[in-house]
Length: 91
Image 1 (cartoon, rainbow, N blue to C red):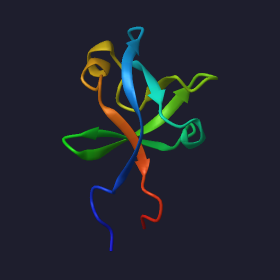
Image 2 (image 1 turned 90 degrees about the horizontal axis):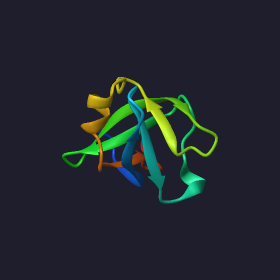
Image 3 (image 1 turned 120 degrees about the vertical axis):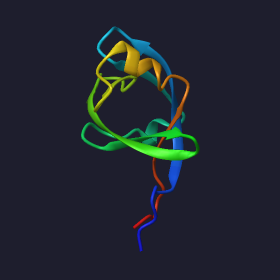
C-alpha cells in the first residue's frame, strides 16, 4: 500500500537563489546521496515532502533548476527549506 506523501530522508537544504530564472543553490549533507537530473527532489514543506523534478544541475550539483520553479519570486518561496529523497525501502 502506498502512503502519501512518501517518507523523506533529508539530504540537504536550499540556501539561496542564483540569478533570476529560478535556479537555487543547494547545500548537500552527503555527496554520495546527491540525486541526478531527471530524479525527483522532495522539498520539505510543513513536514511533508513535495516532489519537484530536477531539470538541470551544474557540474558540482550546487546549482539546481527544479520543475515549476522558473522565476526569482518562486525560488524565494522555497529558500531555507530542507530537501530530501525518498526513504530507502519505500514502495
